[in-house]
Length: 368
Image 1 (tube, rainbow, N blue to C red):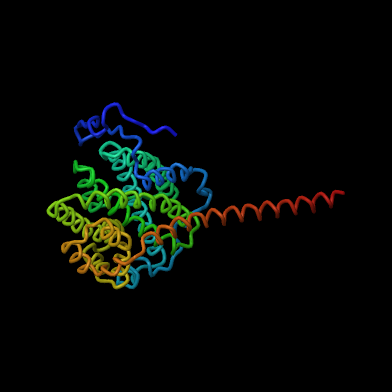
Image 2: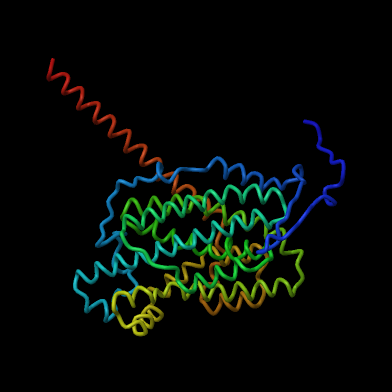
């Protein structure tokens, strides 16, 4: 291979302009990519999939119990409100809770779609632009898939105010690294934990497969954010890192409070203040909300945002123990879980084909 030489040094040829919503950066250094990001880009290309084909949309959802999980995972379980409900009201609560949760997944994925398109524009390095381009397609596929699920469920909710506030902050900040930080690390990290809880707990094949396949993509997205920010944040001043820590601390409180689901309780005609207090104080729900930070805490430590502000925030939230989570092992498990579902489907299809062939042989023998 012939080495590539530039007639004019590439540091003199970069160009940036504004599209009115932020800075658009062009970079013509196509030869000097970081190997880890180019490898991630190659993986992103190879791992593209079709939501219409990979997911079995013929599966019927039980509208009275969409996730087929223990009622212990319903935020109201054990509350005076839950005890007063008859089975019809409990079935309605299950359906509304799932509709609300998957609606927030859908809205978050659309936010990720827009943010990743912004990353393609704003990030300086061309290797990061390459990978972000594959993520744009991933996010479009996720929006398609969650929208299709909600159509089968027959119920959807608008974007939660806390999620909308965080998306507003991420989308209106002109600094390219803040888009990464808000979306790739915080919103995607929280989503991965929520997806994982459903994937591991649900008894419904459609919900399990949908979340497992999305997680396989999201695992790469979080890795993308880690790669880029881990190399960039050491270059910032202490004051700049402190500003980003303050943003993360506020965002983590917003995301924790997002899962109180006030809109659901109001829609079901329950006393919102009483219900939210129960959800806030319930030991099970506190444990659930803590688990949502399993990926965010170690990722922020990994990229170098681990000053007193965030350490105090995570200590107050009771999630400091997650700082020692092995992110690479967790990501490998996320990828393997999706592959295992594919393997099980192939095995089931193969067994069905063998069974049908055996029936056909018996029928033919009978005719003979």
